[in-house]
Length: 241
Image (cartoon, rainbow, N blue to C red; front, side):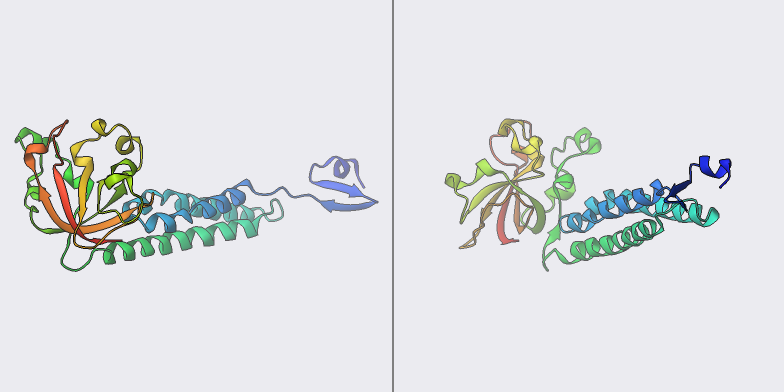
């Protein structure tokens, strides 16, 4: 063996036998990691299509890194290993990008019961144009007063009637489970909360997960300010999931 071969960083001798060492492609490893991270799209899709869209950078990055790693290995055969990792990352990222968004789209398109109009806490919040027109309740939301609506949100734990966690008939549905809606009740904006009253014998059990609620919306513009004396929005609920 020549001196050049003995000093080559890619060659090692063991028991007189020579073998070539090839480093693992970091791009291939990263592609697989992002492919695995992309699976969260399916979990997000169960709650909200927008949440799934926000996670699409994971599979897109996984695809880019995987294809770049495979291209580099084809251009320089024998220099790197990790082709299996790169192919796995590409495949997983592609499945999550297409399948995850398709699943989220299916959930979104089928979750609203017939006869209910979809709305959201984002739509309850007045924009600058509404406020300049002295509308603390957006006109399109005010027009839903007395109509059947569908909305998603979280039960504020300390708002259930008598503190019950089972067979709850009344509670506050809030925009999210972060401190903005679970902190001091006086700090929760009127458009980030909705009083829910279960109609008839319908009841719900508390859980920290997302609730899909439907019922007749009642709007009280006189309570639409920072420190309301009562709820600006009341849902007489006859659907819960």
